Length: 187
Image (cartoon, rainbow, N blue to C red; front, top):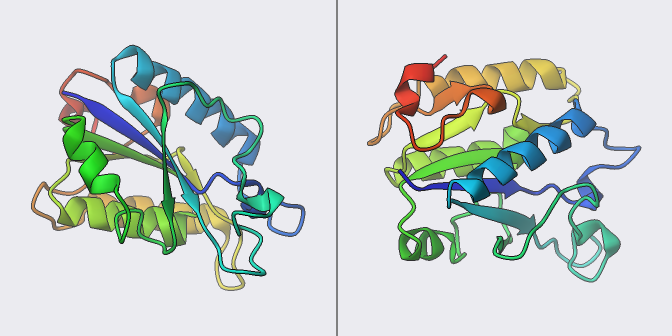
């Protein structure tokens, strides 16, 4: 089965002292390891970058638009630019996945409760078998809930989500089996 790893909004403008993210350094290390495994399995690594409007830290003309410097981007990786929380909406993502015969998605990145969640739901609605690593996405604390609780909540929702291809498979980054039946590792 051919996989694509989506790495959503891991941009400098999202990781600042004013917008700290839960386990950001650990997440980057895990994503680099997972991306290398996907590449070795002849899968596709896709970096999704948000194009914010004028004045937004993610505006393409500002440094915040750039990916985190510790992310390991390689020749052959793809980049998709988006303007909403949904990485599929008004982008070429679906076309790219079909052109590369991608059969399963691994969705990771920032922020769990916005762009990751919306993209997971959109992928499931499009019948993509989807893996979401429990330790493969992050967010910030919100006034009403800690980042850890937001992540825990979304992992539970995705694992029970009613969709054409079934709910998302939820497991740790290190448990993802490329080329094997991932259903055996559902949490």
